[in-house]
Length: 281
Image (cartoon, helix red, strand yellow):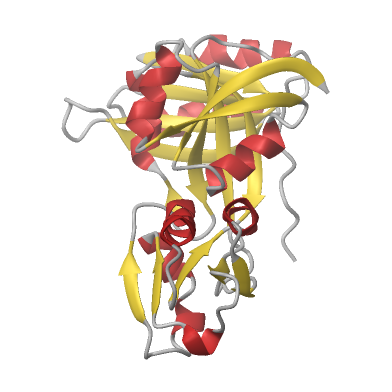
């Protein structure tokens, strides 16, 4: 294990899914978590050097892209240094000694609640209450020793806060994955990088996007993500975010140089090693 201790910013509290992703990505380091209420606060802390790195969700296989987070990357001039894919498994947990028959109320983040709708439909008598964070819901139950109340959160949350899992993996869709970005204030290109994230602003001209994609495909880069993101302060204008896989960094630089000739603006948000993308069966 690398003995260097890193301070990692996350949205949420200890044992949130961002914490799980951070532990997986920075597993070779000792880490100290810095908890933030929202992504903006976390992004600002990264930009100001108050934390070494941040962990930021960017897309989910059910909910799609988190467009505001793309905006934060640009607003705070953040750089992507890596990515982590995490299967999102929801656990129903409560105080030790509690049973499903005792539960009267369930609390969690609204997205977590919606992703467990099929399970919750089996218990129409339960009162469902939205909260700011999955792990914070578990922490609240443990801190106040609440009886008759369950939380939906990660298995790490149950372990961290001493709760009992009453029902495991209650998410409706078992192919629920989230992609997280490791972000930094300065670029840290990986020596064995094979993936890049680009931000383009194209001219308002016929086939401008098609031309850019032709350049990318023509040099053998594999386009894995394309996302239009509103440009704040410029109504109805959009930046195009692209993720590409490449074999040689020289090929990437050649493509970027060629794209610069047909784009109003181009920026490399990061070159990094592709994360272990889960195999969906």
